[in-house]
Image (cartoon, rainbow, N blue to C red; front, side, top):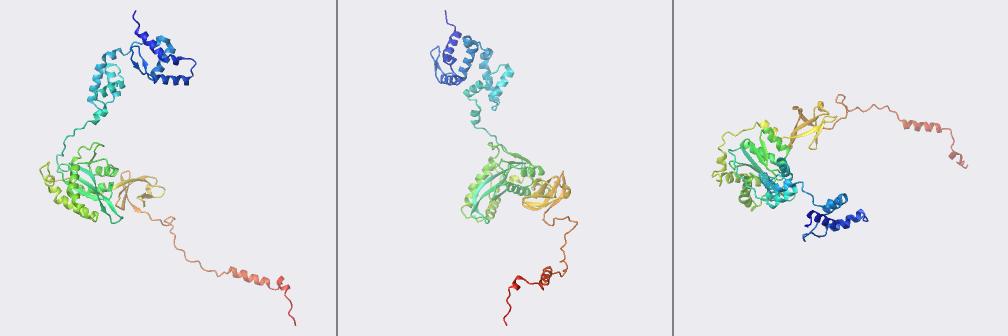
Length: 445
Protein backbone atom coordinates (compact mmCIF):
# COMPACT_ATOMS: atom_id res chain seq x y z
CA UNK A 1 0.00 0.00 0.00
CA UNK A 2 1.42 3.36 -1.01
CA UNK A 3 1.99 5.80 1.83
CA UNK A 4 -0.35 8.75 2.13
CA UNK A 5 1.59 11.93 1.15
CA UNK A 6 -0.49 14.06 3.48
CA UNK A 7 0.25 11.69 6.36
CA UNK A 8 3.95 11.73 5.56
CA UNK A 9 3.94 15.53 5.69
CA UNK A 10 2.11 15.52 9.05
CA UNK A 11 4.63 13.06 10.54
CA UNK A 12 7.54 15.13 9.28
CA UNK A 13 6.14 18.31 10.77
CA UNK A 14 5.56 16.55 14.09
CA UNK A 15 9.18 15.37 14.19
CA UNK A 16 10.36 18.94 13.70
CA UNK A 17 8.24 20.43 16.51
CA UNK A 18 8.01 17.45 18.88
CA UNK A 19 10.72 18.77 21.18
CA UNK A 20 8.93 22.11 21.53
CA UNK A 21 5.61 20.46 22.48
CA UNK A 22 6.86 19.37 25.92
CA UNK A 23 4.63 20.61 28.75
CA UNK A 24 7.66 21.01 31.02
CA UNK A 25 8.93 23.97 29.02
CA UNK A 26 8.18 27.49 30.19
CA UNK A 27 7.09 30.04 27.56
CA UNK A 28 10.57 31.58 27.57
CA UNK A 29 12.27 28.18 27.20
CA UNK A 30 9.87 27.19 24.41
CA UNK A 31 10.54 30.46 22.57
CA UNK A 32 14.29 29.96 22.79
CA UNK A 33 13.94 26.37 21.56
CA UNK A 34 11.76 27.36 18.60
CA UNK A 35 14.29 30.02 17.59
CA UNK A 36 16.99 27.37 17.69
CA UNK A 37 14.87 25.00 15.54
CA UNK A 38 14.31 27.80 13.05
CA UNK A 39 18.07 28.26 12.69
CA UNK A 40 18.60 24.60 11.74
CA UNK A 41 18.19 22.87 8.36
CA UNK A 42 15.79 19.92 8.42
CA UNK A 43 15.84 16.89 6.14
CA UNK A 44 12.62 16.52 4.13
CA UNK A 45 11.09 13.13 3.26
CA UNK A 46 12.53 13.39 -0.27
CA UNK A 47 16.07 13.78 1.12
CA UNK A 48 16.45 17.52 0.53
CA UNK A 49 17.12 19.95 3.35
CA UNK A 50 15.25 23.15 4.19
CA UNK A 51 14.98 25.81 6.88
CA UNK A 52 11.64 26.83 8.37
CA UNK A 53 10.89 30.24 9.80
CA UNK A 54 9.92 30.92 13.39
CA UNK A 55 6.41 31.89 12.25
CA UNK A 56 5.96 28.58 10.40
CA UNK A 57 7.04 26.53 13.43
CA UNK A 58 4.72 28.50 15.73
CA UNK A 59 1.85 27.86 13.29
CA UNK A 60 2.53 24.11 13.33
CA UNK A 61 2.64 24.08 17.15
CA UNK A 62 -0.71 25.88 17.39
CA UNK A 63 -2.23 23.54 14.80
CA UNK A 64 -1.10 20.41 16.66
CA UNK A 65 -2.49 21.66 19.97
CA UNK A 66 -5.84 22.37 18.35
CA UNK A 67 -6.23 19.27 16.15
CA UNK A 68 -3.28 17.02 16.94
CA UNK A 69 -1.68 15.12 14.05
CA UNK A 70 -4.58 15.58 11.65
CA UNK A 71 -4.12 19.36 11.81
CA UNK A 72 -0.56 18.97 10.48
CA UNK A 73 -1.68 17.23 7.29
CA UNK A 74 -1.58 18.98 3.93
CA UNK A 75 -4.85 20.85 3.46
CA UNK A 76 -6.51 21.31 0.07
CA UNK A 77 -5.71 24.75 -1.33
CA UNK A 78 -8.45 27.35 -1.17
CA UNK A 79 -6.83 29.17 -4.09
CA UNK A 80 -6.90 26.31 -6.56
CA UNK A 81 -8.42 28.61 -9.18
CA UNK A 82 -5.64 31.10 -8.56
CA UNK A 83 -2.97 28.42 -8.96
CA UNK A 84 -4.40 27.42 -12.34
CA UNK A 85 -4.62 31.02 -13.56
CA UNK A 86 -1.55 32.41 -11.84
CA UNK A 87 0.69 32.50 -14.95
CA UNK A 88 -1.96 34.50 -16.82
CA UNK A 89 -2.48 36.82 -13.87
CA UNK A 90 1.23 37.47 -13.48
CA UNK A 91 1.53 38.24 -17.17
CA UNK A 92 -1.31 40.71 -16.81
CA UNK A 93 0.52 42.22 -13.84
CA UNK A 94 3.50 42.83 -16.13
CA UNK A 95 1.27 44.58 -18.66
CA UNK A 96 -0.22 46.76 -15.91
CA UNK A 97 3.26 47.79 -14.72
CA UNK A 98 4.40 48.61 -18.27
CA UNK A 99 1.28 50.69 -18.79
CA UNK A 100 1.91 52.76 -15.64
CA UNK A 101 5.40 52.30 -14.13
CA UNK A 102 4.34 54.08 -10.92
CA UNK A 103 1.73 51.39 -10.10
CA UNK A 104 2.67 49.58 -6.93
CA UNK A 105 2.40 45.82 -6.46
CA UNK A 106 -0.40 46.46 -3.95
CA UNK A 107 -2.35 48.47 -6.52
CA UNK A 108 -1.84 45.81 -9.20
CA UNK A 109 -3.13 43.19 -6.75
CA UNK A 110 -6.30 45.25 -6.20
CA UNK A 111 -6.83 45.60 -9.96
CA UNK A 112 -6.52 41.82 -10.50
CA UNK A 113 -8.93 41.17 -7.64
CA UNK A 114 -11.48 43.57 -9.10
CA UNK A 115 -11.23 42.04 -12.58
CA UNK A 116 -10.94 38.30 -11.82
CA UNK A 117 -12.12 37.94 -8.19
CA UNK A 118 -8.79 36.26 -7.46
CA UNK A 119 -6.28 37.83 -5.08
CA UNK A 120 -2.60 37.53 -5.94
CA UNK A 121 -0.28 38.43 -3.09
CA UNK A 122 1.50 41.76 -3.62
CA UNK A 123 4.71 40.05 -2.58
CA UNK A 124 4.25 37.44 -5.32
CA UNK A 125 3.60 40.18 -7.86
CA UNK A 126 6.59 42.21 -6.68
CA UNK A 127 8.97 39.23 -6.93
CA UNK A 128 7.70 38.32 -10.40
CA UNK A 129 8.05 41.91 -11.66
CA UNK A 130 11.58 42.06 -10.27
CA UNK A 131 12.53 38.83 -12.10
CA UNK A 132 11.09 40.30 -15.30
CA UNK A 133 13.11 43.52 -14.88
CA UNK A 134 9.97 45.56 -14.28
CA UNK A 135 10.58 46.69 -10.71
CA UNK A 136 10.13 50.42 -10.21
CA UNK A 137 13.76 50.97 -9.16
CA UNK A 138 14.96 49.45 -12.44
CA UNK A 139 12.47 51.43 -14.51
CA UNK A 140 13.45 54.68 -12.77
CA UNK A 141 17.14 54.01 -13.55
CA UNK A 142 16.51 53.88 -17.28
CA UNK A 143 17.49 57.09 -19.07
CA UNK A 144 14.58 59.35 -19.93
CA UNK A 145 14.12 60.72 -23.41
CA UNK A 146 13.38 64.44 -23.66
CA UNK A 147 11.84 66.12 -26.66
CA UNK A 148 12.88 69.44 -28.14
CA UNK A 149 10.86 72.54 -27.35
CA UNK A 150 10.96 76.09 -28.63
CA UNK A 151 8.56 78.94 -27.97
CA UNK A 152 6.64 80.07 -31.05
CA UNK A 153 7.39 83.78 -30.64
CA UNK A 154 9.50 86.21 -28.61
CA UNK A 155 8.26 87.04 -25.12
CA UNK A 156 6.26 83.84 -24.96
CA UNK A 157 8.63 82.09 -22.55
CA UNK A 158 11.42 83.60 -20.49
CA UNK A 159 13.89 81.28 -18.75
CA UNK A 160 15.73 82.42 -15.62
CA UNK A 161 18.59 80.94 -13.64
CA UNK A 162 21.60 81.84 -11.48
CA UNK A 163 25.28 81.30 -12.30
CA UNK A 164 27.84 81.18 -9.48
CA UNK A 165 30.67 83.38 -10.71
CA UNK A 166 34.13 84.43 -9.46
CA UNK A 167 35.07 86.26 -6.28
CA UNK A 168 35.20 90.05 -6.66
CA UNK A 169 36.58 92.65 -4.20
CA UNK A 170 33.85 94.40 -2.25
CA UNK A 171 34.31 97.99 -0.98
CA UNK A 172 32.28 97.53 2.22
CA UNK A 173 33.71 94.26 3.51
CA UNK A 174 37.20 92.90 3.95
CA UNK A 175 38.28 90.52 1.23
CA UNK A 176 36.12 89.43 -1.70
CA UNK A 177 32.54 88.34 -2.27
CA UNK A 178 31.29 85.71 -4.69
CA UNK A 179 29.47 87.15 -7.70
CA UNK A 180 26.09 85.62 -8.58
CA UNK A 181 24.83 86.20 -12.12
CA UNK A 182 21.03 86.43 -12.41
CA UNK A 183 20.12 85.89 -16.07
CA UNK A 184 16.91 85.99 -18.14
CA UNK A 185 16.83 84.39 -21.59
CA UNK A 186 14.11 84.54 -24.23
CA UNK A 187 13.34 80.95 -25.28
CA UNK A 188 12.45 81.72 -28.91
CA UNK A 189 15.27 84.08 -29.88
CA UNK A 190 17.95 83.01 -27.33
CA UNK A 191 18.39 86.71 -26.54
CA UNK A 192 19.80 87.46 -23.09
CA UNK A 193 17.18 89.95 -21.95
CA UNK A 194 19.07 91.10 -18.88
CA UNK A 195 21.84 89.85 -16.67
CA UNK A 196 23.46 91.26 -13.56
CA UNK A 197 26.15 90.15 -11.14
CA UNK A 198 25.11 90.66 -7.49
CA UNK A 199 26.59 89.89 -4.09
CA UNK A 200 23.73 87.78 -2.76
CA UNK A 201 21.55 85.06 -4.24
CA UNK A 202 18.22 86.23 -2.86
CA UNK A 203 14.64 87.10 -3.81
CA UNK A 204 15.23 90.81 -4.36
CA UNK A 205 18.04 90.23 -6.85
CA UNK A 206 15.80 88.03 -8.98
CA UNK A 207 13.04 90.65 -8.90
CA UNK A 208 15.36 93.47 -9.92
CA UNK A 209 16.61 91.57 -12.97
CA UNK A 210 13.05 90.70 -13.97
CA UNK A 211 11.96 94.35 -13.60
CA UNK A 212 14.85 95.59 -15.76
CA UNK A 213 14.03 93.02 -18.46
CA UNK A 214 10.35 94.02 -18.48
CA UNK A 215 11.21 97.72 -18.79
CA UNK A 216 13.47 97.00 -21.75
CA UNK A 217 11.54 94.28 -23.60
CA UNK A 218 7.92 94.25 -22.41
CA UNK A 219 5.93 91.60 -20.55
CA UNK A 220 6.37 87.84 -21.12
CA UNK A 221 3.55 85.31 -21.12
CA UNK A 222 5.43 82.69 -19.06
CA UNK A 223 8.40 82.85 -16.71
CA UNK A 224 10.12 79.48 -16.33
CA UNK A 225 12.39 79.13 -13.28
CA UNK A 226 13.90 76.41 -11.15
CA UNK A 227 12.90 75.67 -7.56
CA UNK A 228 15.67 77.67 -5.87
CA UNK A 229 14.74 80.04 -3.06
CA UNK A 230 15.43 83.05 -5.29
CA UNK A 231 12.62 82.05 -7.66
CA UNK A 232 10.30 80.02 -5.46
CA UNK A 233 8.84 82.57 -3.06
CA UNK A 234 5.68 84.54 -2.34
CA UNK A 235 7.17 87.87 -3.49
CA UNK A 236 7.85 86.65 -7.04
CA UNK A 237 4.49 84.88 -7.14
CA UNK A 238 2.77 88.17 -6.26
CA UNK A 239 4.77 90.04 -8.92
CA UNK A 240 3.68 87.65 -11.65
CA UNK A 241 0.07 87.64 -10.46
CA UNK A 242 -0.16 91.45 -10.51
CA UNK A 243 1.36 91.65 -14.01
CA UNK A 244 -0.58 88.72 -15.45
CA UNK A 245 2.49 86.52 -15.99
CA UNK A 246 2.21 82.75 -15.66
CA UNK A 247 4.88 81.50 -13.26
CA UNK A 248 6.14 77.95 -13.95
CA UNK A 249 8.79 75.99 -12.04
CA UNK A 250 10.68 72.97 -13.33
CA UNK A 251 10.17 69.69 -11.50
CA UNK A 252 12.86 68.84 -8.93
CA UNK A 253 15.40 66.53 -10.55
CA UNK A 254 13.81 66.95 -13.99
CA UNK A 255 15.22 70.17 -15.52
CA UNK A 256 13.38 69.76 -18.81
CA UNK A 257 13.57 72.84 -21.03
CA UNK A 258 16.52 74.40 -19.21
CA UNK A 259 19.14 73.39 -21.75
CA UNK A 260 19.10 76.78 -23.49
CA UNK A 261 20.02 78.76 -20.38
CA UNK A 262 22.62 76.16 -19.41
CA UNK A 263 24.17 76.52 -22.88
CA UNK A 264 24.20 80.30 -22.39
CA UNK A 265 25.99 79.85 -19.05
CA UNK A 266 28.57 77.68 -20.76
CA UNK A 267 29.22 80.42 -23.32
CA UNK A 268 29.49 83.03 -20.55
CA UNK A 269 32.06 80.93 -18.72
CA UNK A 270 34.13 80.20 -21.83
CA UNK A 271 33.88 83.52 -23.66
CA UNK A 272 33.42 86.13 -20.94
CA UNK A 273 34.54 84.95 -17.51
CA UNK A 274 37.67 83.29 -18.88
CA UNK A 275 38.75 86.70 -20.22
CA UNK A 276 37.46 88.74 -17.28
CA UNK A 277 39.42 86.74 -14.73
CA UNK A 278 42.68 87.37 -16.59
CA UNK A 279 42.51 90.99 -15.46
CA UNK A 280 41.88 92.12 -11.92
CA UNK A 281 38.25 93.24 -11.62
CA UNK A 282 38.18 95.95 -8.98
CA UNK A 283 34.42 96.07 -8.27
CA UNK A 284 31.02 94.65 -9.09
CA UNK A 285 30.24 97.81 -11.03
CA UNK A 286 33.20 97.20 -13.34
CA UNK A 287 32.21 93.54 -13.79
CA UNK A 288 28.63 94.47 -14.72
CA UNK A 289 29.76 97.22 -17.10
CA UNK A 290 32.01 94.79 -18.97
CA UNK A 291 29.30 92.12 -19.02
CA UNK A 292 26.67 94.50 -20.44
CA UNK A 293 29.04 95.62 -23.19
CA UNK A 294 29.93 92.00 -24.03
CA UNK A 295 26.24 91.04 -24.23
CA UNK A 296 25.34 93.89 -26.56
CA UNK A 297 28.35 93.58 -28.87
CA UNK A 298 29.15 89.86 -28.79
CA UNK A 299 26.61 87.39 -27.42
CA UNK A 300 23.34 88.91 -28.65
CA UNK A 301 24.75 89.73 -32.10
CA UNK A 302 26.47 86.40 -32.84
CA UNK A 303 24.68 83.98 -35.18
CA UNK A 304 23.16 81.19 -33.13
CA UNK A 305 24.16 77.69 -34.29
CA UNK A 306 20.65 76.23 -33.99
CA UNK A 307 18.43 79.08 -35.16
CA UNK A 308 20.81 80.41 -37.81
CA UNK A 309 19.97 83.98 -36.77
CA UNK A 310 21.34 86.60 -34.46
CA UNK A 311 19.37 86.63 -31.19
CA UNK A 312 18.81 90.37 -31.51
CA UNK A 313 17.40 90.06 -35.04
CA UNK A 314 15.21 87.08 -34.12
CA UNK A 315 13.77 88.94 -31.11
CA UNK A 316 13.08 92.12 -33.13
CA UNK A 317 10.47 90.27 -35.15
CA UNK A 318 8.22 91.11 -32.21
CA UNK A 319 6.95 94.52 -33.28
CA UNK A 320 4.46 95.35 -30.55
CA UNK A 321 5.50 93.95 -27.15
CA UNK A 322 3.01 94.15 -24.30
CA UNK A 323 3.98 97.07 -22.05
CA UNK A 324 2.80 97.41 -18.44
CA UNK A 325 1.44 100.54 -16.81
CA UNK A 326 4.28 102.13 -14.83
CA UNK A 327 2.20 102.49 -11.66
CA UNK A 328 1.13 98.84 -11.94
CA UNK A 329 4.77 97.85 -12.51
CA UNK A 330 5.78 99.74 -9.39
CA UNK A 331 3.08 98.02 -7.36
CA UNK A 332 3.99 94.56 -8.73
CA UNK A 333 7.53 94.66 -7.39
CA UNK A 334 6.56 95.83 -3.93
CA UNK A 335 6.44 93.31 -1.13
CA UNK A 336 3.44 92.53 0.99
CA UNK A 337 3.35 91.78 4.72
CA UNK A 338 0.44 91.18 7.07
CA UNK A 339 0.43 92.76 10.52
CA UNK A 340 -2.08 92.98 13.34
CA UNK A 341 -2.66 96.48 14.69
CA UNK A 342 -2.69 96.47 18.49
CA UNK A 343 -4.42 98.75 20.95
CA UNK A 344 -2.29 101.60 19.65
CA UNK A 345 -2.27 102.30 15.88
CA UNK A 346 1.35 101.24 15.45
CA UNK A 347 2.79 98.35 13.41
CA UNK A 348 6.34 97.04 13.01
CA UNK A 349 7.99 96.43 9.64
CA UNK A 350 11.62 95.56 8.88
CA UNK A 351 12.62 96.66 12.39
CA UNK A 352 10.86 100.02 12.09
CA UNK A 353 7.57 101.24 13.58
CA UNK A 354 4.82 102.99 11.61
CA UNK A 355 1.60 104.69 12.61
CA UNK A 356 -1.60 103.74 10.78
CA UNK A 357 -5.20 104.93 10.87
CA UNK A 358 -6.62 104.63 14.38
CA UNK A 359 -9.76 102.98 13.00
CA UNK A 360 -7.65 99.89 12.20
CA UNK A 361 -6.83 99.06 15.82
CA UNK A 362 -7.39 95.35 16.45
CA UNK A 363 -7.49 94.51 12.71
CA UNK A 364 -5.12 92.57 10.47
CA UNK A 365 -3.82 94.87 7.74
CA UNK A 366 -1.66 94.34 4.67
CA UNK A 367 1.39 96.53 4.17
CA UNK A 368 2.72 97.13 0.64
CA UNK A 369 6.31 98.38 0.53
CA UNK A 370 9.55 98.42 -1.40
CA UNK A 371 12.27 96.71 0.69
CA UNK A 372 14.83 99.04 -0.87
CA UNK A 373 12.86 102.18 0.02
CA UNK A 374 10.86 102.08 3.27
CA UNK A 375 9.84 105.72 3.04
CA UNK A 376 6.52 104.72 1.44
CA UNK A 377 4.40 102.04 3.11
CA UNK A 378 0.76 101.73 1.99
CA UNK A 379 -1.83 100.22 4.32
CA UNK A 380 -4.57 97.98 2.87
CA UNK A 381 -7.57 96.51 4.67
CA UNK A 382 -10.32 94.40 3.08
CA UNK A 383 -9.29 95.45 -0.43
CA UNK A 384 -9.19 99.19 0.33
CA UNK A 385 -6.20 101.43 0.73
CA UNK A 386 -6.18 103.30 4.05
CA UNK A 387 -3.41 105.67 3.06
CA UNK A 388 0.25 105.60 3.91
CA UNK A 389 1.80 104.59 7.19
CA UNK A 390 4.01 107.27 8.71
CA UNK A 391 7.17 106.63 10.72
CA UNK A 392 6.33 106.46 14.40
CA UNK A 393 8.14 108.92 16.68
CA UNK A 394 7.94 108.34 20.42
CA UNK A 395 6.80 111.60 22.05
CA UNK A 396 4.55 112.70 24.90
CA UNK A 397 2.64 109.97 26.69
CA UNK A 398 -0.43 112.20 27.23
CA UNK A 399 -3.52 112.76 25.10
CA UNK A 400 -2.94 115.08 22.17
CA UNK A 401 -5.83 117.32 23.25
CA UNK A 402 -4.01 118.30 26.50
CA UNK A 403 -0.49 119.22 25.42
CA UNK A 404 2.23 119.36 28.05
CA UNK A 405 3.59 122.95 27.99
CA UNK A 406 6.85 123.88 29.66
CA UNK A 407 5.99 125.24 33.16
CA UNK A 408 7.25 128.67 34.34
CA UNK A 409 9.53 128.65 37.41
CA UNK A 410 7.46 129.15 40.63
CA UNK A 411 7.58 132.50 42.43
CA UNK A 412 9.89 132.45 45.44
CA UNK A 413 8.25 132.88 48.91
CA UNK A 414 11.48 133.95 50.56
CA UNK A 415 11.01 131.45 53.40
CA UNK A 416 14.25 130.17 54.94
CA UNK A 417 13.04 127.35 57.11
CA UNK A 418 16.45 126.25 58.34
CA UNK A 419 17.32 129.85 59.20
CA UNK A 420 14.17 130.09 61.27
CA UNK A 421 15.06 126.93 63.11
CA UNK A 422 18.55 128.23 63.82
CA UNK A 423 17.29 131.56 65.17
CA UNK A 424 14.75 129.82 67.36
CA UNK A 425 17.46 127.62 68.77
CA UNK A 426 19.57 130.63 69.71
CA UNK A 427 16.63 132.33 71.46
CA UNK A 428 15.82 129.24 73.47
CA UNK A 429 19.41 128.99 74.68
CA UNK A 430 19.56 132.55 76.21
CA UNK A 431 19.50 132.50 80.06
CA UNK A 432 20.11 128.76 80.35
CA UNK A 433 23.25 127.28 81.85
CA UNK A 434 24.74 124.22 80.37
CA UNK A 435 26.86 121.57 82.05
CA UNK A 436 29.87 123.05 80.36
CA UNK A 437 29.20 126.45 81.96
CA UNK A 438 29.12 124.96 85.51
CA UNK A 439 32.62 123.55 85.18
CA UNK A 440 34.18 126.83 84.16
CA UNK A 441 36.60 128.19 86.88
CA UNK A 442 36.36 131.75 88.12
CA UNK A 443 39.18 133.91 86.87
CA UNK A 444 41.81 134.72 89.60
CA UNK A 445 42.08 138.29 90.87
